[in-house]
Length: 236
Image 1: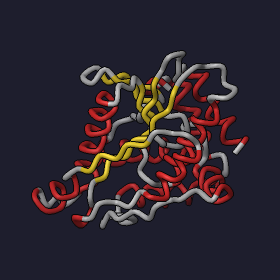
Image 2: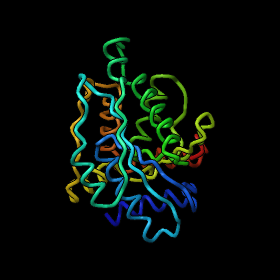
Image 3: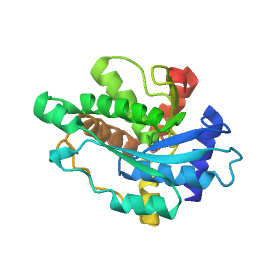
Image 4: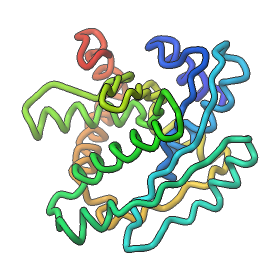
């Protein structure tokens, strides 16, 4: 976990993600990234020199009409003294049953993000932390390039004026394989995704493309994020 905390501390300090008095809602999907981020944010409070608080927040799409069982994650939050709020929604019903989206990921992502931002404000939090890692950034870059013909990526820090919430991504410097390794070593209660599209998305196709390139050049992803920073794309 120490190396992961190093990645997070570097990102937080380099991009000015946190300030004294911040109340941070940590968006929890139940996946490895969000759980590692949650635990990292709580542990960093001890020595990073910034006075902030952490509140775990899960938006449940309710896939298949069944609410997600967060019992194990709630136990983790209790162990580390982290408040935990779950917001059940009708997102899955809207995306799959009402709209019957042929490409559901985009709409689902927008609706979940909107619900997260709204819930963050209702909790009285000023920051929303999301668990995107370095690999997610590279995938997003190539998805924008291949699908929309534009050079863009999500930002490490974004202010959402409509909700008066700042979105931060503390894992943005952490390679996915190291996040996964940390989650395994710590025995974190990672939930299996109930999404019917899991593993069959455009992002998965792009991920395979990147893995092929990384086999040719192990520094491939670092070169892409380095290029984003040097070019100043999306405030990198």
